Length: 411
Image 1 (spheres, rainbow, N blue to C red):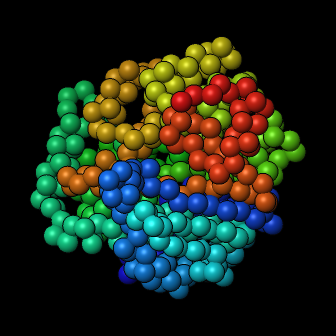
Image 2 (image 1 turned 135 degrees about the vertical axis):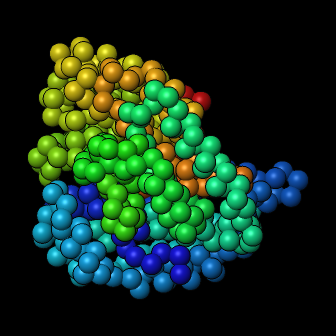
């Protein structure tokens, strides 16, 4: 059994789910799976990283996932978080995932189709564990004798780079649940990082104090290993607001205002790339600059993004040194160090490293995502500064979204 606890997911799933319970309990959604590196060989017409042979195994694991419920100790742990409300924990005490909302099928190309469709409140927790299941099923079938020695060697190199002279204030966080090689390897990586880098000691959205491991997005391992759980909002939250808000043009500001209504200044990191950076900055006015603690980068050039964020704060008469910039897009340790050296002293910094921490044993990792594509029957989409990250099944809606937010078409 790959997933043994409903806490084995990212914190932002719970923080978003609480907003859904309180503000959007009737919303209906649809999510779709995509493997970004499942290229089809022109000669054979088959995907080079075929997942179709493992459909039955993936279904079995999802069935086991749907048999889980929150344990009392897990609910106590969630209740201890200052931003989690008691009625939400009471709801989770009754919660079960329902297999009827998920369909998994094989495609002729060798790829797979996964669709999640149902009430947002009852489907939001599927994404992360299903992605972890797909990863682990794939790798345990294709790498039956994994090269753990190579994985440990690579991890040792990363730790050595992070412990270099002059980097003692550089803190990283684990964001790698969804694309990890396996749950056992994920835990080993966190135990090694915790022992050799030291850990943050204070819960928060950015970095704890103490060592160089600020924490982890994974709630189970945060509880199990005494790490700081990290996370605020994800793309699906802002995408859903395209259908839930008063009008499309105001959907981004509506999402931020609804978030502030729920958390009253806590969990104040805004995600910046659902409509691209220019559209984000147009909406992220003086009010939001002061209200939110900072912003998270997840697509486009990170150096350009950081400079634009700092300039935007300065134009709004907000001291950038009081704000946090979080970088989380396909980071490696060398890239993290470059970003740290560029922006250190100019703002507060945090870095979330995912696949490069939890799935770096020498094999090509799966670049898999599950994205919301519909809410309340209408299309929703993300228009990323990295066009390959866009995902929507309605091109007319994408064109309309670009027009409404004045976003130029990019190739």
